[in-house]
Length: 522
Image (tube, rainbow, N blue to C red; front, side, top):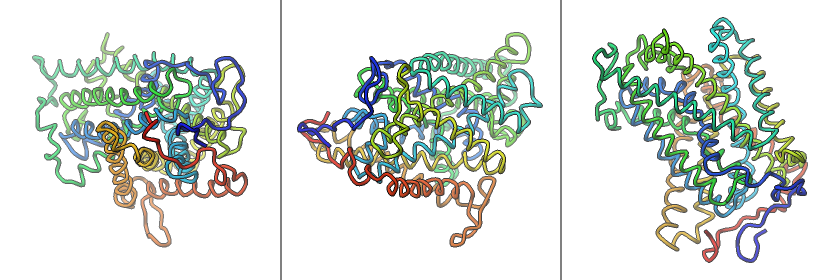
């Protein structure tokens, strides 16, 4: 319900369990702006995201890769402002779940929460796999890195360790993220500077090409289709900054700091990606052989090959190359941890509002962190990772590619929720119209377009990805679309089951549909 002032009232929550606990029992004031930004950045895994995606982007758009990585920033910034504005009115750790319910009703909100959960569980499999592979490569154990059994085992251990860290306290999680992020960004900047110095030095590598303004002209991309597919791939590397908002109830000044951290995170990511993509392309070129960024052999990991070429293989160069491998390892490990945080908070909020079983709303009496939700996220991630690895590596690869559909779904929903919730406020001032209306609406529309284009055009092509499925009505369909859409349809089924078993959220939600009051909205 809403209180007389028109502001959202807090949910019926579990009893406060200790000093420093907030309305739901989580520890309040544990994070400041710097820690929130660190969590937001770390959750995107900049080093891993670049390693896994830059080659794909270059293969699709060639020399225009830097501008594509920059254009993908636009919808992310627009949605970051939607998060910022909605958080100012209702700093609930359920984020899209609560905001979607307040704008469109309990069923839409439930599906928004499911979108977060399913996207995070799917991507955890990839993060754990990368952490396992790079852990072995760091120590020169290449034979183990190539073994599915050993990398799966190592990935499971990584998930268990990061789940334990999230379980024992948000402050410990934030402290670890700050250190890991400083290493990650520091090595990325160092690699970029080294590369540019060599490109413009007296003995540039044979692959080197001078930076040109044409790299930053999107109209030089071969076709509109290639441009769209490039941006669709690049959007993935910005995903994760919303973790800074999902820990809002544990953040000082919860209505302001998380939103500011989300916007700052996206801007910093833009700077990092612009620098690394430009310097890497200048050093390695876009060839399909050797260290060329379009080499299909390096498509899944362009940074490993660049490390030795940029830093060298002896002396300090050998150490820096190893540090680069360690950086990708810590990047995926940090993102594993920060992926657990938002999913645990989303399911925790859903349970506190009685949208899923109440056990998931339990809080540890000393650590003041979600217990069932955190452990449940870890176990679900392990089960998904192991199951798909046993079924097929190809199915695992396509499931990871499908995560973009889940991202576009819940990010886009958040943009539309912001516009609709603040619909009576948009004419109050130019600022309200731009930041509460125009920017979230444009962000939502862009992500809706990317969702439809990806699901029904690019990913639906049976030649795309590693698998295809012959559907009764649609015929031979790409596995990425089947898995991505199927995951959302599974959410509808689970919602109906929850509605039948414990339907109080759907019949009498404590977050009713409402709109911001112009006299009271921030």
